[in-house]
Each structure stands twice: as C-alpha cells, then as structure tokens.
Length: 251
Image 1 (cartoon, rainbow, N blue to C red):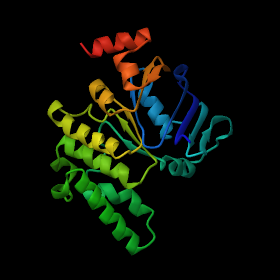
Image 2 (image 1 turned 120 degrees about the vertical axis):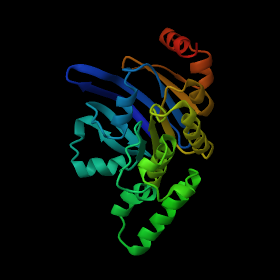
Image 3 (image 1 turned 180 degrees about the vertical axis):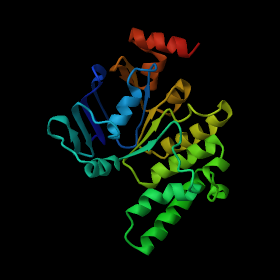
C-alpha cells in the first residue's frame, strides 16, 4: 500500500491557480524528487502537503488515513498541527531558533509533548544521537550563529527527524548554501535515502536528484508534466518542456 496518496490537489492565490490538479503516490522507503523551473508550483505543493498552506481542492492520504479531503475539511489550528506531524519539513533558510543551542533546537518540539522526566531524558538522548549521525557531536552546545550554513542545515534535518515523521520533506535544502557547503548536506540526504527514509525533495540539483531518487516528478505551470524513474525523466525525457528545462540545466 502507498504511504502517500495525493489526489487532484489544487491551490489558488488570489485568482492565480498555482496547482492545477496534482496527483501522485509513493511507497514507504522511496525518495521522490520534484524538479522544475521557478514558479512551477513545487514549493506550493510541498507546503500543501505539510498543511502550511491549505489546498482548495483534492485529498491527501498517509498510511491509509485521509488527512485532508477538501470538501469536508474544516480543520482548526490544533488539528492542522497534528496532521503536520506526519511530515517533517526542512526549509531553505534553516529556520533555527537563534536563542537555542543545536541540541535545544532539535529536542524543543518533542519536549513540548513529553509528560514525564523519563520521556524528556529519552528525547534528549535521541536528539544527541541524531546530531551524532549528522556529524555534529562536537557542536551540540553551539548556537546557530556559531555554525556554518551546512551545519545549520544538518541541525534542521536532525530537528525534522526528531519528530519521527512518516515522510521527510526538503524544500531546496541547498539553495542558501555556498557550493562548498552543499556537498555535506547532500551527503546526509543520500545516507538517509540509503537507509530507506521516505523523502520528498524539491531540488534544483539535477545530478543529485538522478543519483538519489527512486522517482522524479517534473512540474511545469502547476501540473505534473512528466513522472518516472531518473532514467526515464532525466536521461530519456519524452515531454518537450522537460527536454527544454533539462537542456538549460545540464548545459
């Protein structure tokens, strides 16, 4: 059974339709990359999946549980927050809290839901282990301003994983990084893919998407113009817009 089913998602801002009926599904353990030009709707789609934006139409189902069905969804803020827990989100700009250390950033959200001292201790140990996996064992007590951009993004990945989401989502995770720091973040994401972490990655790193993805979606003008394996979409595209986009990107 698919871990995620997205059906006919539509989203307008004012009178402009940004998403025009997006449908796809993915299996547990898959890595799905979404590529396309700026303005194609990639980030809006990710924000709709995370309920940072509310779709106008369509449905979102995770593990057989219908999280959103537009015609019947009258969700309050508390319900939306609960539904977001199915998705971990890693943003372009890290979005770390500057007043907290790396470890505090990672464990802050899980601690809010803790009900006992033992649970808080377990959450703290899990946070430390996640930072070790990110190669940040010696940076746990550093504040964001004391970390490089690549280190901050790895803290943000650990923070998203700390909530144990069903699906980890990345919105252009390297776009705010210098080229020399991009590699360290992509290495972490590649390791997560090898561990069969279920991930959706909006990215402009076409070579990386080819290497790490089980499936690729190319979006253009608010629709899915092409979808398939990396070999199909990147190496042998059939859609003219996909060919045009890749020709510009892979010059």
